[in-house]
Amino acid sequence: MPSDGPPVTTDLHALPVAEGGLPWADSVRANLRSLLEAIPDAAMVMDRERRILLANANLFRTFGVEPGQVAGRRPGEALGCLFAQEGPAGCGSGMHCSVCGTLRSVLHSQQSGHQDVQECHIPVGGRDSIPLDLEVTSTPAVVEGTPVTVCVLKDISAEKRRGVLERLFFHDVINTVGGIHGVAELLNGSIVLNRQQETEYKQWVLALSKKLIEEIQHHRKLLAAERGEFKPELGVIPVPELAKELQILYASHEIAEGRQLVLGETCDCQIISDANIVRRILGNLLMNALEASKPGETVTLSCSDDDDTVTFRVHNQGVIPPEIQLQIFRRSFSTKGGAGRGMGTYSVKLFGERYLHGTVDFTSTKAAGTTFTFTLPKQP
Image (spheres, rainbow, N blue to C red):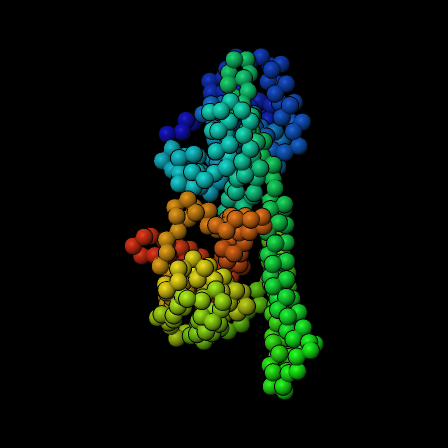
């Protein structure tokens, strides 16, 4: 079990240097504090048990904590990580700790004796807050015969967010513009089209241009949501019609080739929410399920009426590996690889929970397959 650590103080300059107070001279402590304050990012010095001995003012500002919350505690406990108490021994012992970049960086540094750099996605501040993406640099050192780790936490959230959004925007827009260009070439080509073909191609241009506008509008909403400025456009949504519309739309999508998308049990009710965002969320879940399915497998969309809420379920027959399950809703995480990926399930969680006040979750086992659930209140 974690130690209670040294006495807690609210004075930055009186933060304890070790449990029980190791005999470091005041000059040594003063030099350590000066070095930490010279670092432009959040920084801390930890002992071999990962207990924080000293921290700079940037750490308090970045994470919104007081010095008294930091002294003698491990990073997750001190900085407010939502998973800090998940394991039996506190920070470092839970399931999510196994994929924590901060823990990995510190342990690798201690074990190798060399500097180690990792990326860490830390959820702090409660359910409605935006998690931080950090670059963690851990460096081993010895102070007055005592081994310590100097850990610097650089906030790279803006960089990660920009990379993800840029990739998504250009990917979606280029795909749609490419479709418009292809049809325009046919209309402007040397091949003579009959009236029916010409009318059909013009309808394609109209549909694709409408889709382009929708893509741009969605990315504007995503930017607003990241800034905490998004406002849902509420309206009445008939649930059976929505489910049928989604099943028809995605069953004919190119990603569904060789796979079946079927409509399971549905409920006859309606909800008041943002129809475009609800469609986008369920569309994301259906696309992910179809992409994760093998040819010949079936994806099922269903929903149930639970008095004050409606729960949508998207089920596929595959299973998500445990290490991926722990990271599934992270902004910059993706199973596909490549810079700028990882916004699909993150945006589902962001819009579904923070702005539509629903709940997004999933279960995945070898016996039952994978089911993502999206539960929405009937009334906002």
